[in-house]
Image (cartoon, rainbow, N blue to C red):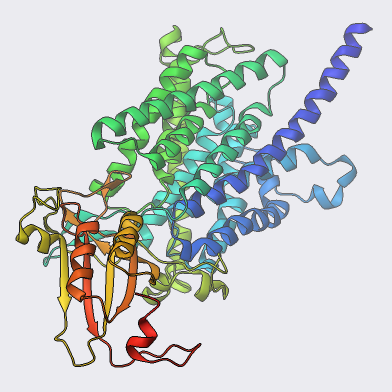
Length: 580
């Protein structure tokens, strides 16, 4: 009797945990939204949030009508579940928990596609293909794997969805990005139309993207662990789900540090997700050693995937969805056939490296090929029909302006802030090396001083009053202010502006691609002088601004016809008396 009571209690506890896991998976929608918004440009943030909201809501609508029954309905010759409307006709006996759990998984599959097709897809088109994925593509292949279909009958193992969810979403993203073409300015072409350069489009809010990754990592414990049937199995799943992404992130950090000279932030964030994707299929049947290897490969594979799409396939994927989800979805599914072990709680599977031979690995390969074939054919048909009817891509003007306004009537997702597109839509030619070879102003030659801080001066007029405008590095503000005070200037107008430029040999990298044109914070200082010689102002400013590099600043001198002090009505030199 005591044993029966404990079993009943355990059943109730794991039933509750199953629904908590579903809630955690739903919370991952927020993570996907934050990653995609942070890794893209501010002018599209509202559009991205709307897409990530609607793929769950639209997915719910179609999953109610058709998706759930195709997935978990009565098996029909191993291919699909029997269509039905039990949610309406027999609600009292309906499988509520399984419906919610599979719905949130379905929504995850659809939202993966959004990132690779971001910043240039029509919103209506997105809604349509998102519905197709949730109603047809995901439910049928998931039935093969989890609904009693032919793959599950063969012994194919995908515990939480490396194949059924991530590989399917990533492959759909790859095909969609290919249909769309790259964003304007992503690739530089020569006069013959050949691509000669890949340009970086830095994400507008990396902290937001990092928040998304942490949200996803938290949600992944529910993603992988919700279907656990014992405390021991749940604990083991938590261990492998922690080890794999951690190892992947460290490996990616070290690799980018060695290859590019600095550890890449966004690639490391992608690597965390890659490690999570790869461990999703084998999380219940692998041990710590297997999780380490799976994570290490994921950390390298995500870097290779981003490079492959940019430099070989020439496919523009703004957030790395293909490298993270498709490539590591494939890897995680294969890894199940390599690292499955009976030492994991509840596991009866043995992979190739644990004495199981090629049987499980062969089954995993068959599953990968068949699911990829189904996904590629159906999503390609969907994209072709959309492209031939309403079109997939927005106009060039809408893309340049940003999708928030044209698609949603949203002036900005950041009302009250001035948004500036710092991407390489307009590529600048390289200048000469910026280092002039002499950092000390006193020791520098006149030529070096002129090259570092250029002076443009208009011919003097009779008034003797001048406006001096100085544009320079923001970091030199305090030194410039002290220099101006020392020569008698006590009043200045200071504005923070953005400057754009590139110096040969000084290019930084974002996700492995060199940033050609970068907007950097600059300051614009304006002073009006009369009694103080202009040359004194210029010399003091040049000395304060000089660092020995081209781009230290520019000084413009204009003639002033009239100055009026509003408070007293004084004019010209009298008006300047208390501001010099």
